Image (cartoon, rainbow, N blue to C red; front, side, top):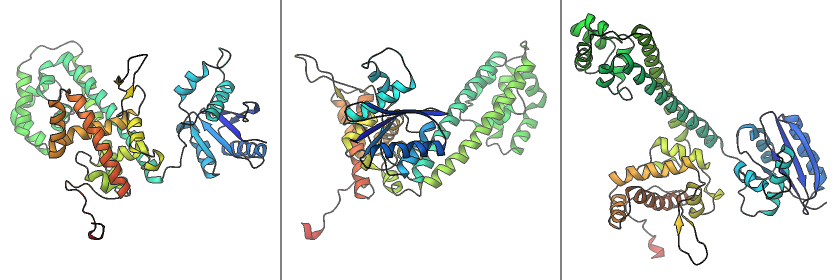
Length: 401
């Protein structure tokens, strides 16, 4: 039996696996439940068909419902390729028939794995990288929930008490959120008065309680009209303020868990030594890449994945045109872009590079992207050489001089 390629269209409850030979002939097509015994039976049957010859597996998901299958294949030492679902979708248009089935998608995945040489093998991530991926994803969800809650809170206050909505920045002021857990209407604030409100806030350990109380009372005295629905809106504001405070506490706990896990990674010191990269961005870098640079092979490949490498847009006699890539890892680009923005302010060498790009006519965004690309090379070298960032070049050994 010649070499085989096994393509799997992964799903939540079931997968469809299609196995083809070197001629593209289908030798197995099976739907299997997403359970360990059934997946182990599938792996065993495919290996029997191969009769000792190599099998290349391919899957259209690298997490989620395919996680168990990936773990089993990696545990059995199988070569596994990842083909993004979008690639499968575009490739399927070149195959006969307009219909879409799981069996066809699995065949397309297997055939693409057979023909293409640019697909990236999936490797098993270490435990720290997996934990950081889970924690950073959770933090991302929490911050998105917090933003939505803040926006809803401000919109609700604006409907019946616009002066109070303008008085504080609820996205940064914990004191303002705490105030809303007790007093939400102009009449309630006027009744308690300045002195008692200051005492109420101070008992809850609010900093600058007199300033907060004065701003709230000023807003209360600016409005004496009762808007219809004020009582219900006040209850809703109270609920939303408590929800935001609960989210803040959970974000703080998640940040602590991220820092504790990130500190255990071997690349932690190299990452945080780079100006502009702190605990959160460093953890997100590990979460996006797995921390194994051998997977990418070169800094140019990593730059392409991160969206920092321009791609050509040539046609006919026109050549030399470059454009931003359309497909790249958004979160990984965010790591390099945000860190470059910070470095452009606090790192002298990065600031010099940024200003030189601006003097060449680049926009702010273009200059930051250029700086991010340069910093990617530096970070690659730090991880490769297992050293930390320094503004001075590394000294050669006297014996090498």
